[in-house]
Image 1 (cartoon, rainbow, N blue to C red):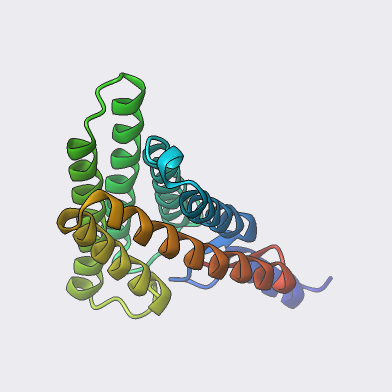
Image 2: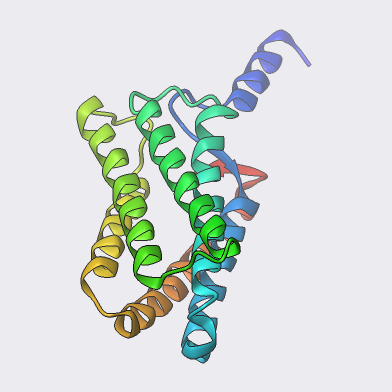
Amino acid sequence: MNNGEATKLNKLKQGVQGRKLTTWWIVLLEGILLLGIGIFSLANPQAVAPWIVVLIAVYLLVDSGSIIRANTINQVHSASRYYQLAAGGIGLITGLFLLLRLFLGNDSSQITRAIFSIGLLLSGLVFLVGVVATDDKQGVRARDIGANTLKILVAMIFLITPPGVTLRFIAIFAAVIGVILIANALVLVGRGVKAQH
């Protein structure tokens, strides 16, 4: 391998500045979790009601961990990096707090719904404010903006709808997004070990 090929290989390993790299299996795991939440919720809403908090908390932990990983380990140098880290941190804290409340037996469905809604709302808002405030066109993709807009919408639906309606909405929403993420992961596998996220 000559010096020029080695330089090109090093640039490929580092990735494009401002682009987030993540392995395909993280996207696949997110998709499987969401699809599982959706199918389980539609199949047996009464049985899933107590477990929906656990499933949502696990999803928040995986999603937030993915955001934090992409902005730290992959060393993304986007203008809105710190806003993205803050949004990931809010999601991570929300997921951990939900699990802690559940396992300590301090579960009140109204309080849990409020914590989830406010955490999701803040996470989405911080991300979007960061994109607007920094005018970040390089480190953020349309999919990131869409996902955080959906977080805000889901949070608002949680805040204003009764639990039965919310559960059906979550089930359908989770299943559809899960299928999309699984399909995306399969496309990423075809492109190689790493891809943009």
